[in-house]
Length: 437
Image (cartoon, rainbow, N blue to C red):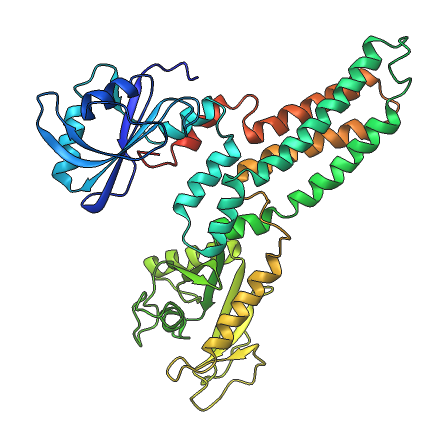
């Protein structure tokens, strides 16, 4: 149980007004609070229809009450859920009543999830997956979040951790009891072979990080080119709405514009940039600087040229898709293009969308969704891998030094799921949650 003996409450459903409002309460005082509000404590995990009243007997609302006794609840504490009508006045009236109870206060953002972590109901990977599930906007984001929040990724790390624990135990046994008959004379065959196997598994796992980051954070596609090539028109066409201002005046776009799209279940972050050219105009020059920065960070650059004017043989970024626009007009450019499009007539746009999805899938082809997806995962797993490799680097080093490498690896791996030394991370992680979760 959490050492925090305060009972907390919050609106856990969406903002009011709404068809339904769910108020969650967690802590030691839950049975007493529920009994005061509805007259009794309903049977565990059974929905009961009750009138919710103030301590003066005034009816606030009629709704469903659910009670989850500790430790079999989301937080591991006594938890109650009050399902009310989602009117603002109804929720405000209940809030005013709840704050009158002693030792009962509004929850901070993420506090329910933090108590679940502190009480061993969820680990950090599952907590992060839960936050991602709440924020998921595309099908692939949902799948990735479900895998992490349901413990699929944690089971891999816990399995590795158990193997490391066994390896360390065997080494410690040899160090402490070298003369005992029941301790193997050499742990090399069974320990170091498994450590080598762990290195290969961890290396393959880390290679999936880019796929996880793209699924979670989006595939960055940047539209670049000279002024008036049709970049803003292309962005509007792909977004199917007017995101960018389109004029015949060169240099209309002065900043990086951005819109999120869902393509084949993936999040695609589409950027429109300032036209690339030499200029003395201060604002446009800053826009070009920002364009060059986002181009350098892109997963895919779509470099477009107006085929109705002669190509100036300008330099195209490496691995960019070269697209010729305004293909409905008489062609003047002799350059070879990957794709020709006409935004006015809608020619080639479906082919361009397919090309974007194909490039995305070329980078994202995980065999499962149990893959890392955050910078925090990369940092700690990389530390784990480095320590494991250090333990194998020189077989002639002292066994105690190699055992220390395994301890470092084990601690780093433990930080991924929150088993060890993560106090400084908690405020950051739980700060991602909305109030009520």
